[in-house]
Figure 1: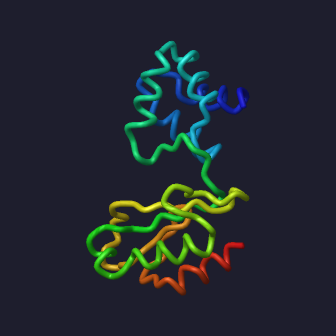
Figure 2 (figure 1 turned 180 degrees about the horizontal axis):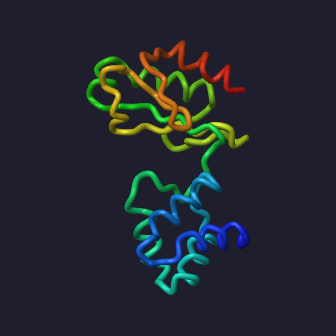
Length: 149
């Protein structure tokens, strides 16, 4: 892990680059491992609390491991009105997940809701690793999971 972190830190050397550093770490590991946060704090000569405050402030950062496929279901107004919740429920049922358990045991899938994906005209939408899938239904969402396997 330290070799990967050292490579990231060689590209971002300033304390003002904490966010890009955390983004690079999350891109590599799909979350922010505690060991990585402590290492970055030490290397940048900043307190661990500062790193953690940034990592926990921004919703896109995760301190929990995520699956290979991160599925974000929009529950903004347009998507909610067009029935995004049944899509969420269908995916949770298919994958054995719940509101508390967001990632499958095999680390393949993470299902999350987001306030808005900015694709209201395509509602209801979900993304898989940031690729947008428009006009989803519970059935089409479950079929999508089958194609990812």
